[in-house]
Length: 95
Image (cartoon, rainbow, N blue to C red; front, side):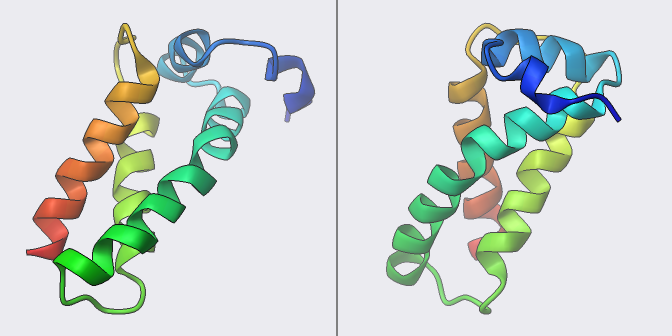
C-alpha cells in the first residue's frame, strides 16, 4: 500500500480522479478527510428527523463512501457531491 502522506496535499477533485482509477490510498485520504464532519452532521440531524436504529449514521456513511469507491468519473466539487450523496442516503434510509 502506498504511503497516504503523499496524497495529503492533493485537492479532493484530484483524489477522486485517482479513486476512479482504482487508487485505494486516494480513497483512504478522501474518506479520512471528510468522515468526521459528515458523521457529526448526521449525529445532530438524525435524532430530529428520524426514528433510527443506533447504527443508522454508520450505514449512511458506508453507503456514501461506497458511492465514492464506485465513482467512475470526476466531479467539479467533490465536497458538495459527497455531502449531497450523504443527504440523499440519509433521507432514503431514515424514512
